Image 1 (cartoon, rainbow, N blue to C red):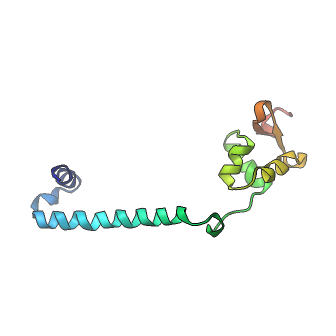
Image 2: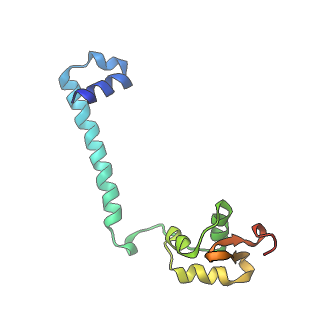
Image 3: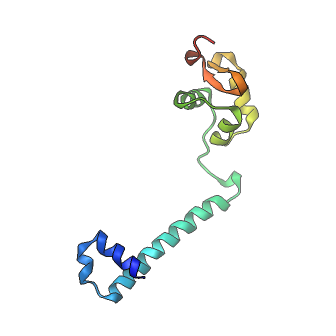
Length: 116
């Protein structure tokens, strides 16, 4: 408890004038906010996958945008996009999408692979 009071005093010099009851009330109110946030996050991850909303569709453009930030492999992209590997693989295999596969399955943009 003493460590918490020291932290409070460091963050706000006016905390020196607080009584122990005010400090306890402050800690309890902020503690409840953290508990509520933890409950919300836990609830989001315990929902079945089909209940998760705002899942965006995987498109060649989104994969190209991702590959502009750095090279990747199909399994990693499937995780990042929450999509089946087959979906990513079909996009990659279409040569019109400008994505090429190099050594060990690394994916590159055609423009980054020196005409590869």
